[in-house]
Length: 394
Image 1: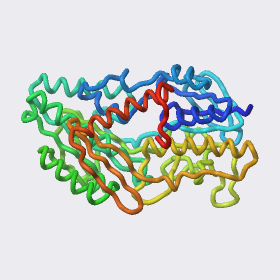
Image 2: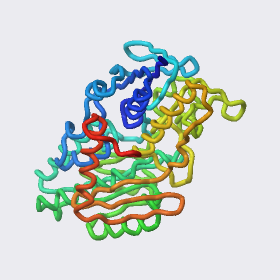
Image 3: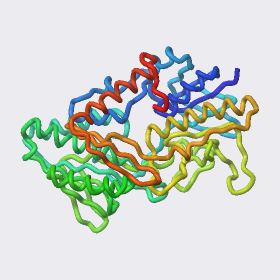
Image 4: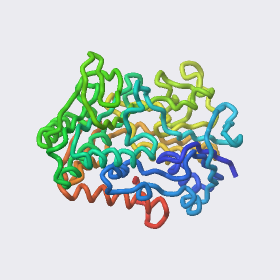
């Protein structure tokens, strides 16, 4: 039985492990965390509507259900042409290698002065602590935003920034202290959220006005400070607490590898998620694949990396590895599945957002939308644990 080594225990890595096991392969999953973290539902930790335990699934539980080998270790080096991986506590080889380690973050001066909902999981409870402290203090100024990466615009996380901001607004409103807080949303681009389409942009602007949320757009960030953000023109946004989501860049481990990387440090792949060496000459393949945030994805300018695209890539890789092992020429690609799909939660409702080549739409879902997203979180956990059937495509 062929051995597959998967690096990463997020959406892409776990999905690849599940579907490769369904096809009968020996699978070893290496993760530096012992749990699968459901980032899309972590948005409720800052307001106390969810806990770390609510949005985490022990990888050991997934291991028991699906039968893969689990190793909790930190990857240090990747030698893709040898399909050899060096970790802090051991070295591993395989017939097929799947890289699903996520990405690194664009560096910002003064990063110690902000917390991120899309950073390390342990930052989410700290966001709650900071907000609780301000409530106890009687009010303050809160700034939330996200950044971009001109070298790879697909690796941006704007949605969670909007969601946390709207949820905090409603949380403060429920506490009866919203009027004591100044909320500001900031981003370096002129039209943050433009990839969702024109209709979504107009609706977001309505949200900001209706909820009395200030905006600071179109200025590059120079640095973060303990009490605010300084922009390239030396103007300043005062903040007692800053939540910021840096754009993604190449994972630091990729620099200790022979992987082909794009300008942003992400792994170059073809439509079938195969890592492509000597891309501009004669392509060379070594049964190595990259999926999710680790990969440099192609597609339209508005493309964005999301969990459902990562899972499509993972399922495709399971199919493609099986086809290669059986000598079949059949392959499945990810490009035809590029779209934006999310339920953007606001705490008291949500909006359904969808974008493809034909345009984008944003449909308000008052009240029920919030519970739809809650239901998805329950489905995500229990379907992966095998407690309920998987819905095809989800």
